[in-house]
Amino acid sequence: CYSSFELSQGSGFNGFGLLLDSMGNDMYICGNIPGATTPQQPGIGHNYSQGAAYGNDSFGTLIDLLGNDVYVANLSAQGLGFRKGVGALFDISGDDLYVGIQYVQGAASHEGQGLFYDLSGSDVHYVTSSQGLGSAKNSRNDIFPAIAIFVDEKGDDIYNFEGDSCGVGI
Image 1: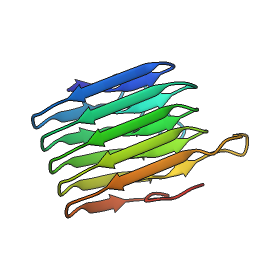
Image 2: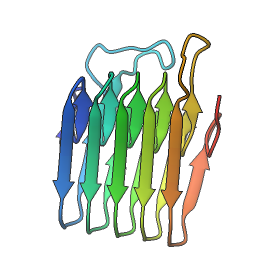
Image 3: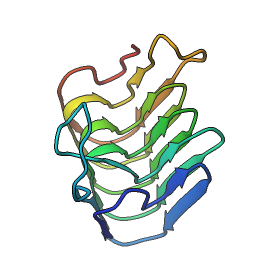
């Protein structure tokens, strides 16, 4: 499953999106959006994919039940809740690889709620910039807190991250 666009693979953008996969060794790849750029990462765009939600009353969910899976995204993916959205990524079993740059793997910002839950398997997690692995960040204008939850239950896991990641609230 490859996408070079925003809003795919279980994305909720001012609405509800669900991707449910019951079995198989899957590759969820979100490439860079042509011509996209962000202040945080010049030349790289937001994906809002792989269980990400943007906007009030939005829900984005990716559920993978079985398989050794690969998840790759740039920004804003893999269980991200942004601008009051609720995003979740659930992977039930398998030895999985998760790679993202920023706002990934159970991250939340601007009053959003992000949830990342991996039940079992020996997994590898990479966050190459910041705000990943259960990290929440708000600005001083936000009224309600951003809530980020990262749970990886069983397995011999590897975590490689940069910046404000791994259970940080800002």
